[in-house]
Length: 139
Image (cartoon, rainbow, N blue to C red; front, side, top):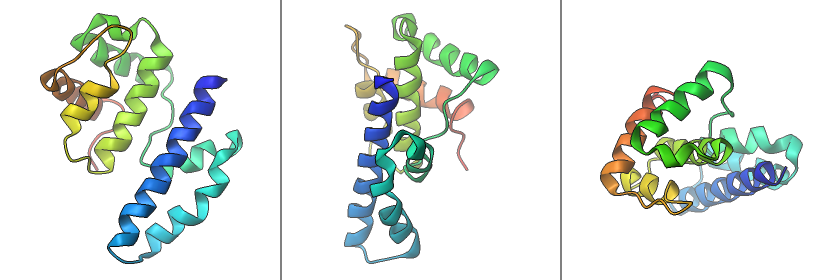
């Protein structure tokens, strides 16, 4: 349950951050939509709406989940000991990729450096390639 709460909090923060960045460039209808739904994103029932607005894909299941975990496993087998943590990191990285992160390879390396594993930007690049093939293809 705490993983879902953490995911909801991260999604809400990303949604608010997206509004803050877009409001500097002027107001547009998409930014207003994100802003209007961000306060409602704090409850577990609204998690899917906030996650979608933040560019985060839904939690994968079945064969899709297996494919995401396999792509992460290819980079470092220690990253999938906690599958839920790996999936949450992957979903959050998709939000960074879909949101136009400045340095997505570094972002992935930082996001997946946990449980004593430290990744390089090159490792992050390989994670991003795997995520683009599985969980968050480019649109």
